[in-house]
Length: 101
Image (tube, rainbow, N blue to C red):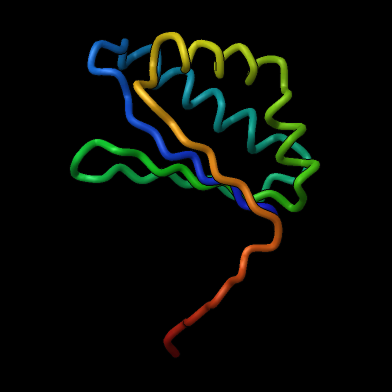
């Protein structure tokens, strides 16, 4: 498994409708990529967002990062949507699971 954590803060002046449309399209596109496992996004009370995506390999995640339509939206994100972001990525993270019976 390859895990990508995208931690971000949005710009106060961003176009919410445009962002929502782009975000929905990126999820749709990502889900169609070979090696995609899952995507979830969480927003903290202070507005910070953590988005988690799981891939079956680093190669699959990097291929997604190079997708032509995704590259365009990445540029739009830096220019119009995000005040800041940090991307964390790791191969085979240590995983501990618990499930109540």
